[in-house]
Length: 330
Image 1 (cartoon, rainbow, N blue to C red):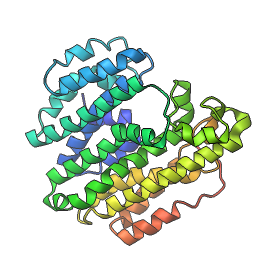
Image 2 (spheres, helix red, strand yellow):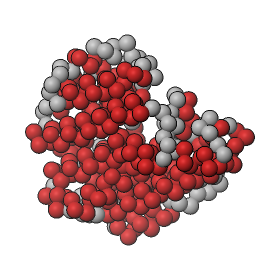
Image 3 (cartoon, rainbow, N blue to C red):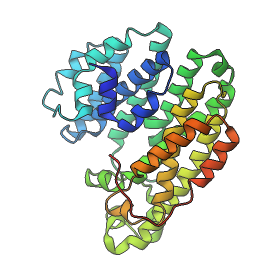
Image 4 (tube, helix red, strand yellow):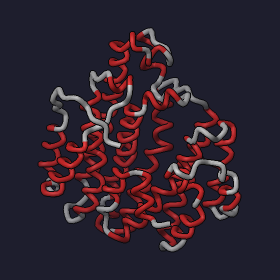
């Protein structure tokens, strides 16, 4: 398995960010991301029986802990479509595990611990089922799949740099928000797709007071009410995103590459939230930022992102959206 090619196949957007990291850290984060995509495959793949997913996720944690051979998992997913990059990663988990074992022991321990915790959280949510009752439940789900990733990155950053380790007391309280910010935006973007596979991650307390159900939320005749739900989710995303911005500004400017790797997904998310407000495409099809938006964010932050004040100003500018047609950025 060629790690970088596989990363790009699974997610071009995150590949752009991860490839901006210093080489040693880039390899550790790439392996971490791909290990988590194995977990995502076991959680999300529509060809796996729902009752089997939690079992496979727990088996995966035992493999990571060294208690089971990786073949115990890969032998059970040979029937999945390997043309799906995420499935390819899961089916080749043995190569991924071998790459993990080439990393320093401290780094291996950090990665294994967080991927295991996240995977166990996913397993619990598979048993919980596809209905989210409250915002607290939504936060718990997002913490398992993304908030823990914020802690994982913070630990890897600290292991890489003594200067970042000294900032741990500033970064750690913000790390969970960083993950929750990106996951809230993922929920907004994936509303329709998730609904079609049987999941609605929007809390019932967001739509039931408006007289909506998990099904009528997606009915075209209820667009005006559904947009109120979208805007409430956007408000929640913005709250987490602001903490994510503070996470980035707490990273010393000398680590410009690490800052860029963090700011790009955060700023892409910020732009997506701005485009999602009062946007019927979110309910009907889902919406993503344009390619030109992505290129503009990358270009401007690369040049000016060393300045915390500039970052805060630019973050505010991303809230302003011109009334243009939305393209889709795969």
